[in-house]
Image 1 (tube, one colour):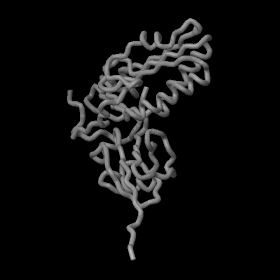
Image 2 (cartoon, chains in turn green, cyan; image 1 turned 60 degrees about the vertical axis):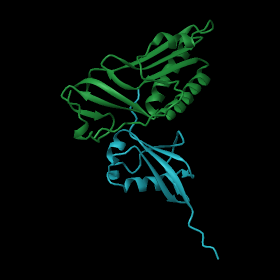
Image 3 (cartoon, chains in turn cyan, purple; image 1 turned 30 degrees about the vertical axis):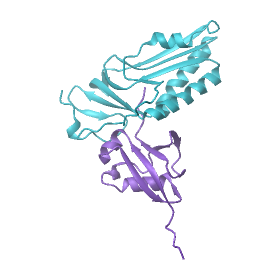
Image 4 (tube, one colour; image 1 turned 90 degrees about the horizontal axis):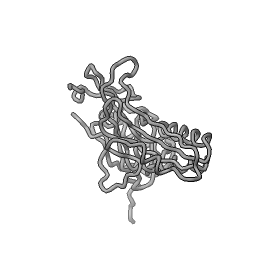
Length: 159
Length: 88
């Protein structure tokens, strides 16, 4: 049995989620300005291993409306605390090794604030934003990340 | 003399990731006795077939915000039961 991991929210205006490849340049352009001389960026990409096992791809799912709400709160917190501009996007769906899952750009008059804001945003996203992923291993097994509950046999990746 | 029914409230429960797998569904509408907290709704969900695999104190959100399990729920609330987060 294969269950959809999140129900669709038709018509939802998604600002922080995308199902297509992530480009960093538009995010940087969004936050750069003449007053901001420091831009820090973070990319989280799909790595090919987890605890010594070979990973072939990841599948991300999300509670989309809450992702939007929580990301907006996190960005607002960072912008207020370090007087910077922050752009953030997270990808959902199936991602191959090497593809970008999350991108953050933080721009500030000086580098310390940009680095601090960028670091804050990635840590808070990991701690607060309702996104989940399943790892597809080279040996054909599939596991939810961060849980002891194995995916039932019927949803194992046989590819 | 009118006998009024005990007060109840309806809560839309959303399940995600491994928890949706546990119950074989990703949503449930429950009617619970009022007043009720998140824990009361969780108790009902965990009594459904497969629900015992959901931990007693998971991460929860009501109406798109993280909440403590002692938070009161109101009629029409959307309660999301969140497996361990794995974004980034």
